[in-house]
Image 1 (cartoon, helix red, strand yellow):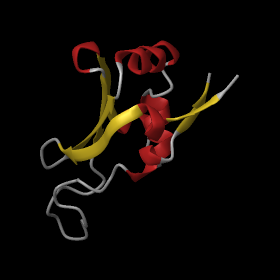
Image 2: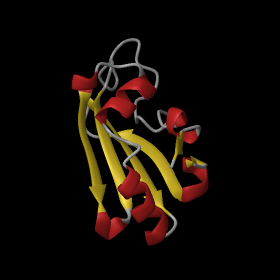
Image 3: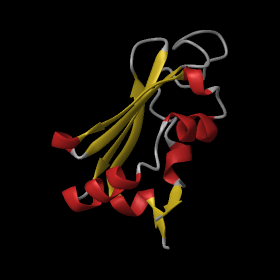
Length: 106
């Protein structure tokens, strides 16, 4: 068994708004081989995203493996709507940090 770092496998790890009430995370892999390996082991699922972001699993709306783009997309409910009082990232572009340190064993 070996430990894999997501940052070593992906060329893009980003977050962005998916409307004022949702955040979307995109993981785009460097190669189809890396993507297929990741997809085979499915280390990113709703439970994993919930744990990474400290949210209830029911707040994870989607985790989609999208083969043509060799990408994984996860969407969650925003804890605070975009632009609301107390919200600190209007564009949702700084929320991907937990994914940057994600590792899995396979």
